[in-house]
Image 1 (spheres, one colour):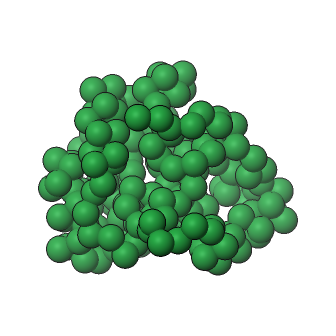
Image 2: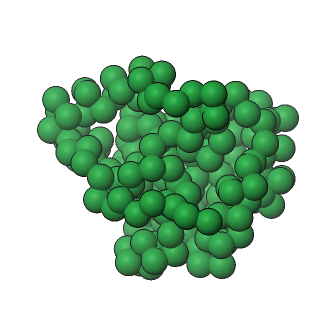
Length: 180
């Protein structure tokens, strides 16, 4: 597999993970989701799940199995978020390593191609998911309420730039706006 394919998400959503709806999940035939945590579900400087995220998890849980897999090493932070969402988790995943993703897939007892890897980073989440043959979903980072500009995510912006140079297309395919 070449770099273009390794860095190409199967689905790119405009906006946050909250825009990933049951209809989209059903459209792609997914039975499970592995979710990144930092900046995918919760801003990196926040230690708890928002009411909007809790509501989203409850809605999505009725359609697919969910598992959290984070590179973060903080048991207090990731474990606390996972417990507040009542979700199983692995921390210290070292993505793009596939080891903890494989462990989550084994626990879910689902075929790899029926599980989506959802994250905000190309060189960790998308790369790890694509290396395993998962359906990869790139979302925009959930940012702290005090941050209104994605230019404050220079690593992600650099990853997008490099990916496009390597031939990956980082154009959103779904633009549904999340509404309460």
